[in-house]
Length: 343
Image 1: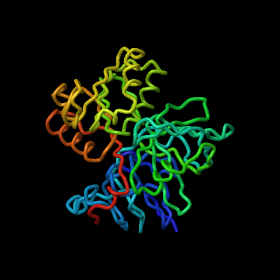
Image 2: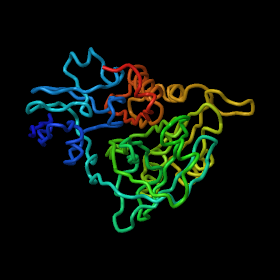
Image 3: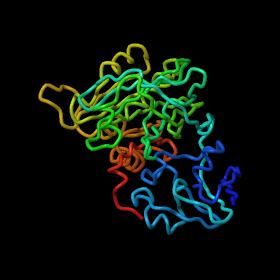
Image 4: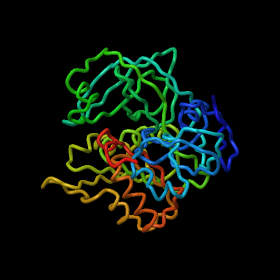
């Protein structure tokens, strides 16, 4: 049994099966609802239920509070339709452009970029290339049915290889394997592309702020590569934050891009710098606020730890005049993040 989902204000309609979430049905049918983690932890797919009845599954209270639920808001990744429903949500042009598919991937190389970060290159089937937008992510399909999500760190190209940056999470089911047992030529199963985090077209060419913490740099790197290839004329300032200098594991690459892209500035920021660090210090989003106290004419793309993304969205919109619809984000939720207070 299926129910009809109508998205306002676009009026687009699609069918959701009885045991399928509104988001899963939208992805399957290339309807561009915004989303991030698909696990009820980030809140990117928050929308308003205008008509009909849904069953809302377990989710993080920080993603959807009880007060928001009382106002009619739901999470598309956790909502299943019990009747025909009407929801209010902006749609992301291009989010459903490429079909989501499963495929085998061979590990072609593993390179340590920092003590707790590796670059994994995956060789994909040449006859069935993965098409995606820079900024999107894939999921590893583990044998027990679990999934782990990682953003592509390389822009789409004719090459059948994609680059990923993986941080070791001690005790992590997948990253423990990556850091202790993964070998070259190993075969993994992946699915993608997923996500609505990618660079939007802008006829006004507003200046861009790219904000990354840790391996949140990976999708930003892919977007920068795409901008360089397309000779995108927009001014970009990249703020990349970490605790120690080793957390900026591709610092030299970012510096080199500034020479190749005259519109790019790179500002690294450390919160716990070593004595020999001469750069910026403190919270990375605060460095943006110090430099650009009025963000009303900018667009911001933020990626990394949820605490950084949430602080940046709150402070930029409340204190720096950034329009709500000019903030685009991908919060890297871990399994630990998903273990917080639930509703």
